[in-house]
Image (cartoon, rainbow, N blue to C red; front, side):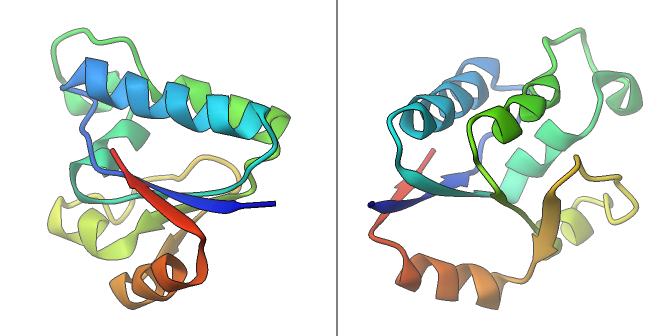
Length: 118
């Protein structure tokens, strides 16, 4: 089984790209690829509820993370450096998500068969 790493980089404010990245993740999981997902850069804002951001109304992407368990997406990571840079270190992560360092992300990139950055 091919192991694919999806690097999520899009903020929820660019709704189409964030949603498309999520749709791609779920589609790949549905056809039995082994997936790992890393939220980095502005994608960490996808993990924040719109009420907490005091942003214009957007359809929350984070509500879809509950589907990850149904699709057997078990390796979900969040870049600790991105959280720190954006003042989100106290952000409660969705169940099953864990923080990792940029060094660990680099090691993960080397360990997978394919990387998709979206």
